[in-house]
Amino acid sequence: MLSEEEKKEILKEVKQYPYPSAACIDALKIVQTHRGWVSDEAVKDIAQFLDISNEDVDGVATFYSRIYRKPVGRNVILLCDGVSCMILGYETIYEHISKKLHISYGQTTPDNRYTLLPISCLGDCDHAPSMMINNDHYNHLTIEIADNIIDNYK
Amino acid sequence: MEKPLTQHINSLSIPLTLKEYQKVGGYAGVNKALKEMTPGEVTDMVKASNLLGRGGAGFPTGTKWSLVPMDENQGPKYLVCNADEMEPGTFKDRYLLEGNPHQLIAGMIIAAYAIQAGTAYIFLRWAYKKAETILRDAIAEAYEAGLLGKNILGTGFDLEMNIHSSAGRYICGEETALLNSLEGKRATPRTKPPFPAISGLFGRPTVVNNVETLSWISHIVENGTDWFKGLSLTETGGTKLFGVSGKVKRPGLWELPLGTTIREILEEHAGGMLEGHGFRGLLPGGASTDFLIEEHLDIEMDFQTVAKAGSRMGTGTMIILDDKTCPVAFLHNIERFFALESCGFCTPCREGLPWVEKILLAIESGNGRMEHLDILRFQTKYMAPGNTFCAHAPGAAEPLQSGLNYFHDDFVSHINLKKCPWKS
Image 1 (cartoon, each protein chain N blue to C red):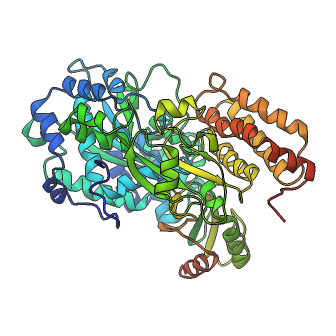
Image 2 (cartoon, each protein chain N blue to C red):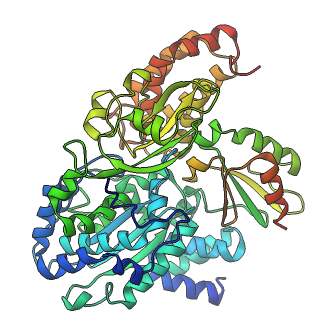
Image 3 (cartoon, rainbow over the protein chains, first blue to last red):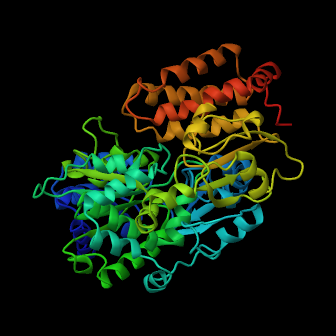
């Protein structure tokens, strides 16, 4: 079931378009903002609400990288693996984070605190390496800086 | 030297408010276009300015607009700003979006007026959170000042402006894929023709322009085509945002005349290579452009001249390959990106790119064979324009085909040594 708040937010997006199904991506993002990810049940609820088939909504949900069809941790670390960040050494930062949190890309820590994912490119190449945690952007990373930033996310 | 696009962007990137921007002359172009010019006159002016699209393809903006049917009472038309910047190595639109949102909005109002669109969308990259907040505030200010909404400046022209924050896929930058995405669908590219100007968003006439392109419009209308042409050192009008990333002393972004040489950008503005690093090559306009090497450093950055040297100016943001970075690893990184971001719709792209990625990984990790180089060369031809549905795979083939030529010896030494010479 979509919550009243979710419905209200989705209807606000629907107004931007000539017909409701165009708000499919917005609806998926709204649900994800409230719940952290998009479950099978949520796909069905969105489909019903926007009058689209379940398969169409799932097709859209699985196409886009930033729609999560599996649960993620409370904090999602997106480490830029673009070519400029590679030149500036994101790989050593990845190795450090991976060792520190005992997870590799696509995994979540057992305490549900962090999920680690790759992303390319964050459009911050002149300040590489960079990363995002949730909605926050960080650049000029070193192992120490990345380490401190990550600790701040509880 | 005039820097129209960035003159009001300060180093902290705190954008001017609408009132502040108006005080320094902002929105004057909107006044002029809507009150003194017909839509056709605006389009003709942009056409005459020879403004070439700044998203990478360099298509003439005025020509794109002039394809839109202008009969009255024919139903809705749309203007879309492509702000889905995701080309690896590219960070210019972010700067304009965060630094001067009103410059973009003013340009969009005029563009929408020229094609008589009643609704405009900014298709914004998901990751650009700061830009999203800044744009939402700026759009709200513009509504409040009567520059958006019904009867703009009392001229009878109506325009609604919306932001669509995307859900993350590189292919959304392809204009027809972007339109599918705006319609709430998977972002697979569409067949052309019909071109978006005839049948675009929701099946209606639509113009899609890049952020940097639209940011120019108000300046051109206000200052004229001669002024615009005079900003450039070549026949193409205007300045351009040029960027440099990689192992240089001062990575960054500069607004410079079109036609500035690569050497000047690299050595004067970016300060040259970092101490202890030698130059090997560069991608002049993002990951999907062919390598240029030492012998090309004196060519001018413009669409035509870079094309003559066998590459593309693309987005104008260069990625530098230095001698401490393995060219095979560099290419593997790029091809992995393109393989991951293929929409999967057509075979050469869906199957070819992962194949290329796996071979590059094999070579980089010491498992390469000489025949792998033939397969890679075959793939660059197989993914060439005409064999694929859109420009994604041909773009991916560009750095690969030139990389195979310029760094042939490096590929061979990986294969002979059975390891990457850059790894101890």
